[in-house]
Length: 142
Image (cartoon, rainbow, N blue to C red; front, side):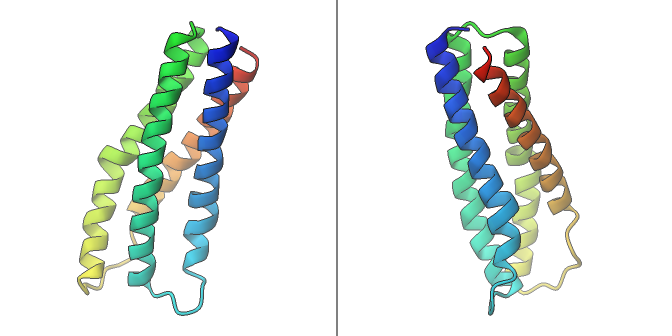
């Protein structure tokens, strides 16, 4: 893989990783511990934050895919890039719409039991973090 494409893809990958770690594993759980933050308020904030995060993630994914495609990547780098993109797509196309429908109901005042959908999102997020780490490390040595 050419050095410029690898450097760009690596930098974007690690920025993406940092954003996911900061938002998903730091901000999201902590907001519900703040004084006065109710479930509906936390859900409203979470929807805004994750909508913004996912939009940025989609843009970063496009940049990584473009850099990897233009750089003559190895099969391993191409596979990791596809895996990260597929994990993001699963979150955006399958899990987030279900979570949004549920949060709509909660925000409308409906009392619902705890959601298992969040476990799916977190599970995909953990896999995405691992794939981003592997991809970033692979790009550093490409």
